[in-house]
Image (cartoon, rainbow, N blue to C red; front, side, top):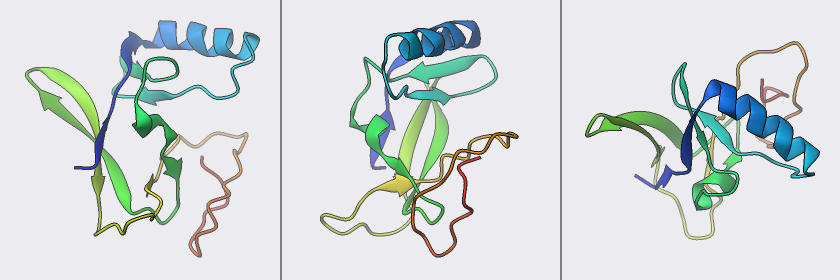
Length: 115
């Protein structure tokens, strides 16, 4: 285990409203991570350092949803030993959409987009 992705647990309708509000307020990035169909963790204003972990198409970590005392949590685990000063990354696995988000990870196996 590397770190838990923490923030406020919210429903989809609230996530949609917050995402729009964040854009209107000029907040450049929102940190919304889907747990399941009904639940999203919003780490935009109340998260920890896990929200700053970058995407890579060839990551050294992965995100896993676990249940602790009937509450779902997102935990980042390492795939391999991670050296001091090595960047921690995981595959965001965004859903496939028509409008592509360019990927800049630089991996030899880069897919070219996050979705």
